[in-house]
Image (cartoon, rainbow, N blue to C red; front, side, top):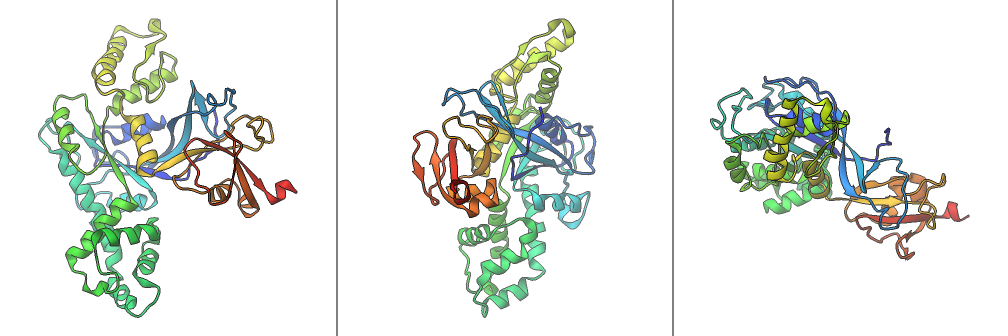
Amino acid sequence: MSTQKSYSRLLGVVGKPNTGKSTFFSAATLVAAEIANYPFTTIKPNRGVGYVRTKCVHEDFKVQDNPRNSVCLGGDRMVPVELVDIAGIVPGAWEGKGLGNQFLDEIRRADALIHVVDASGGTDCEGKSCKPGEHDPLEDVQFLEKEINMWMQTILKKDWSKISRTVETDKKGLVYHLEDRLAGLSIKRQFVAEAVRRANLNIERPVSWTEDDFYRFIDHLRRIAKPMLIVANKIDLPTAKANLERLKKLDYVVIPCSAEAELGLRRAAEKKLIDYKAGDTTFKITAPEKLSTGQINGLEAIKEKILSTNGSTGVQEALNTAYFKLLDMITVYPVEDLEHLSDHNGRILPDVYLVPKGITAHAFAYIIHTELGENFLYAIDARDKRRIGEDAILKDRDVISIVSAKKRG
């Protein structure tokens, strides 16, 4: 089914080579990314569309919906989101080693990151295969943090002397100048201000910052502007369980995952061999006559060793977590006809938008259409028919109709 895009945030899938990063991307999007067991399989970043899964509101209103920019499957709305599979990174990427420059250029555009880690410890620091358990996956998290920090620091350091001196005489202040310098990294002013606050630094006299102060500021800025979760991949391997518990002690959301299992299930479902929806806790074989004994045993192994143990393969959970927790987004359904919950073509609950938590009704109108925002009068909540003003904060799963001056006239 073709869908109209409704996403506005880009999710970057990152990690060193050979961790299952491209397998994760393919499982999430069903894009045929090249997958192989050697470093730098992903030369050019792959782009694709995955879906976040959320409960649809049509059951609340006892209606049958007609989605346009999303898909409704069994009562769940699958909302399209954009992913990019970024070239594998190795230590020293910020200095240009490996495919470092290409990796970092793609990170500029990402709003949040999914770091795919080989939880089994079967991939060394450069992405080469080693015996499971020989490598410490916690080192991969630390090195990725350092690579992004050093890259951001290098960009800012180029003009730091000039910026820090200018701030003392310029009324615009430090945050303004830092935002301007970091604009190419999709870093907003509020991110810069919050990073300075968390680092507890003197915003009036940045010339007094030490090297440690500067690096601490960059580290906070990375965590705020490029929030990241850890996907502990290859969780079905024996050495992964202990490493998972160690990874969970880090200051990140950590999700156990088997991207390979998810990819197998998604492909089997696509061929109508099994009944499975991304994120389900189990599946049902629907065409056993088309499967070999080995294939059936493989599917049953996935059910027993991964789904029963972890609750899911982790791929869908990672996407949902990235958008609903890291990026703190909610879903809002706009309609034109309140009585029928439809658009002007009669489609019921046709669209759902992923928007930042805390968005106002007026700001949401602008997302739908500039003209609707410019002529905004008020909105109406479809559940209780209550009129809400321009500053009203929308909630997750709200269904609203926006009344504009042009529409009323």
